[in-house]
Structure formats: structure tokens, C-alpha cells
Length: 297
Image (cartoon, rainbow, N blue to C red):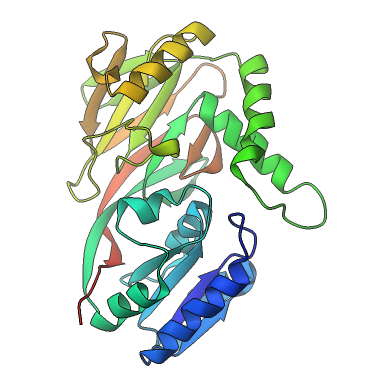
């Protein structure tokens, strides 16, 4: 059996039609797919040892939010594959998953896997794993606002890239950029915006942490020191050109454990989901994720 954890609300296209094509491709290779749409049913199933006893792999069919949720629900050692059906699909792009049911069917049939590190963030005694990145500051405030808008009403709203415009505009006007202090071993830094990266992937394909790797047993961190809108524009241009790492007002390092704190609560997000506010403890969990890799006939 292969569990397909599907999200009907991610992305802008008809996910049910696309997931149906994926299920047919898996069935053609003897995968015995079981598609689960409801997130509560999915979480209960992944936590049930008896239900998962005959499962070969789990496919997260959705966007980066779906991938992040499934990673936090996976039984230890259970192989994960991704069928990209969201807006950014950063995880899928970073680790070689295409919008191709036949190719994913071949990869699952081949059964090849690799292990990746995950980051772990602890806030108020609750822990959450992340595969790509965690940040504190303006973009986390945008994520918080978007999540509030998406969950307003009786049903979950579908998110497109245009959905970010209003939250971003509101954050640019009202967010006050309280400084975040990062402590990573002997190193300390303070600034308006902090990123902890497990992989290079970031929204809009920006090369924010180009040297980060998900298999090196460490996390890369960056702190952007200045807080004005002019500084934000300057940083954005530098990141777009890949020149931010040489700036004197950008601090960086690599660590296995670090702490983010602030005098006033600062919003935090992990892999595009709101995670509350600082303080947050972050560490790396080496080899925590078993990932399906591309197979050949």
C-alpha cells in the first residue's frame, strides 16, 4: 500500500483530477494507492501502527504546507515522496520531484531512498520539524496574516500567489521590526530579520542561503541587521543578485543548535506555516527523513 496524503485546496488547479491520475499511475505499478483527503483522517492513519503496517511509502500530494504537515506526522523511517500540487513547491524543486505521475510511480517502484536532516523548532514546549527553513521577522508576520485570512470562514480558502499581496502590504505598513537576537554556540548576532536554513530553497527561488545542505548535519543561519523599508529593499535586491552574503550588515554562520529571542515577541514561521513567536529553540535532527529518490527501470 502507498498512502497518498492529498490536499484539495493547494495550488490553483484541479487537484482531485491530478491526484486521480497519480493514483492510476501508482496502481499500474502495483502500488495499491490509498488516497486520503481529510487532514484529520490522514493524521490519525499515519499515527496508527496497525493501519500503516503494510505501507511502503507516503506521498504528500499538495504544496509545501502539505509536505510540512506530513513530515511532522510520518512514522519514523517511513519513506516520503512528493507530488507537487501547490504554488511554490519549494520542497519538490529542491529534491527533484516533478509534476509527473509516471515518473513518481517509477521512483516508488524502484524503492531507492536517501536520508535527509530536518530542523526542529521548540516553542513553548511544543516541537515542530521543518525541512527547508525557519525565519523570524517580517516574512513570518506575512505568513501569520495569510494563515488567519485562509482560516476565516467555514471552509479553508485556496491560496494563490496573489493571496500574499494584502498580507504583505499590511505587514509592510504595520510591522515594527523588533530586533531578534541569535545565539549559536560562541556566536551571537542581532538584527531585524533572521533565517535558519536546512536547504537553499526560499520563496520565489531567491538564493537566500545558497550553501545550506540538508545532509550536512548542520543548519545555516543569517541575520539581516538593519530594519528600515529602505534597508529591506536593499537587502531584497542584494539577495536577488546573490550578493547579500558579502555585505557587512548581514551576519551568518552554521550550527547544530541555536536560540532566537527578542525583547518583544517576534513572529516565527517554519516551512511556510506560522509557529507562534520568539523565543524559539532550534536544533538539527540528522538523518530524520527518509526520502524516495528517482528510480530507473
